[in-house]
Image (cartoon, rainbow, N blue to C red):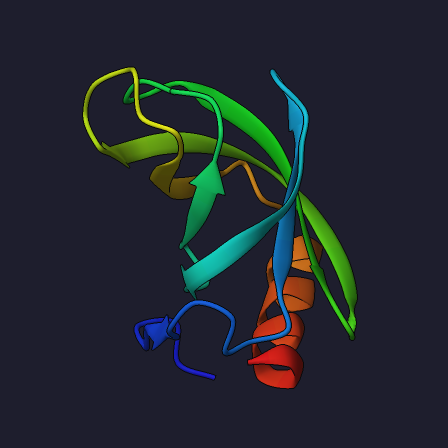
Length: 109
């Protein structure tokens, strides 16, 4: 699979979900898009700022993979919304976990 290809989906059109483990636990968030380098998640209940770090787990029918991430962008940009959409960059992901992620993308999207 080519790492430069971006996989985009409309909400609910894939079998992936995300659990945020820290800093504030949130369960079964919607995956809007995912690439081997980043992920966009929706319906996040807490506001996070750009560069905040989150520990997440991506779950699909083919298994799961854990990763530390960094917030690249948040929408809406200010606190007070009911939910947020986050663009996250995977950081320090091992080669093994990158391969697991590619497998999840192929199987569940």
